[in-house]
Amino acid sequence: MYSLKKSLGQHFLKDETISQRIIQSLNSFQFENLLEIGSGGGALTKYLLQLPGLHLKCVELDEEKVGWLIRTYPQLGDKIIQGDVLAIEKPFEQPFMVVGNFPYNISSQILFKILDWKESIQGMVGMFQKEVAQRVTAGHGSKVYGVTSVLVQAFFEVEYLFEVDEFAFVPPPKVKSAVISLKPRVDYTTMKSERSFFVLVKTAFNQRRKTLRNAVKSLFEPDILQDEIFNKRAEQLSVSDFAALTFRMK
Image (spheres, rainbow, N blue to C red):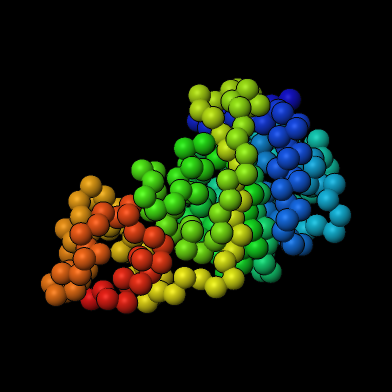
């Protein structure tokens, strides 16, 4: 078979029911090209190979797992990209879907990679550590609402699909997991620029216990900072609030 590498945060999905639920979740999307991130032991890959008319690519960092996947599923052929998903080029020239049981140690970074690719992304169904999934889907006012929540929700409709027990994996992780989906927003939230939006959101949450006035004072003229909205803390602002404020930045 293959060995498990703790250094890569490997926890392989063994529950067939969960694998099938993830595959079924893809039915609400329309796509022809699909990237699987972290194919590992093939828990999802074997089902993805059965989907008709699909152009599939799989990215896997672990050379041993790549060899095992090709021996076990010869039809993968040249569909596997061996490498770090955070470092690879965009896998398709055309729009594509993303799916995966993501390595938890880089799952937040994978979300930022998806944001980088957002113009080409048709959707995502992914397994995350439960706390990360809750953070991505949290609404303003929640204690776990933060940078990831705002940046992802500005460009995608997010849905918390279902939770997964730790014993669905080998070896069982010390945390619970959850599957979420992202669907591109038809119209992005209007903002001055994406760069302004990213800077504002990250600066605001960098000192989330302070009022917005103190946290982002370097980004606004003193007279603008007198507005009542700056009495609030970052977690109290909606995605649209942040977007609207970008037009008032220096």
